[in-house]
Length: 216
Image 1: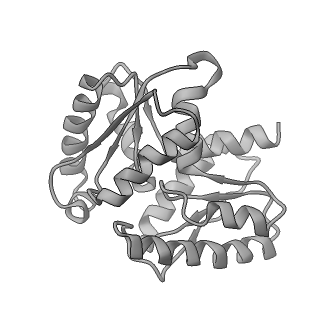
Image 2: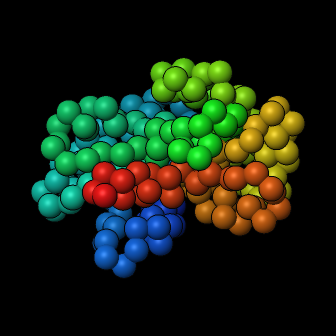
């Protein structure tokens, strides 16, 4: 698992969640892109993330990994890394979009995204991703939490309250499933799920399930 941002703690949490989905027969190794900031919020941050993903991808290949997971919601460097390695490469963003709208039992399900990052270019990329994957008509849009993103990440109770408000707004938009838009938010999907009757989707868990399908 490659975390394209510099948040080592987030890497550990995402590795733990992926490990739970993949089971004891699989070993998940976490790589953190320490050259990037702990939160990817701008186009410049994304460029650093892409460079780090490609560099860490080479390390993962040398470590004889059987598959690589790019663990940032915008999947920086995903397409290029796929060109450079012969093993399966999944992105948490791509995987959760596919699961939200196209899983076998819920084809045609309307979905929204909740995130803590207000960057307009990043939000526009979500729309582009939905359209690119063929889910443009199913995408209900993105709801962004109130408050400073960095501060929310350091206070879990405040983060969960802010996310819950945004989730309710997404449901009001017509969402039948809500994607937690960011690798560091994956664990929040598990914490908040009991409060809601619709699925809250963890990008990391979705990507782990995508890995399983590649080897089924």
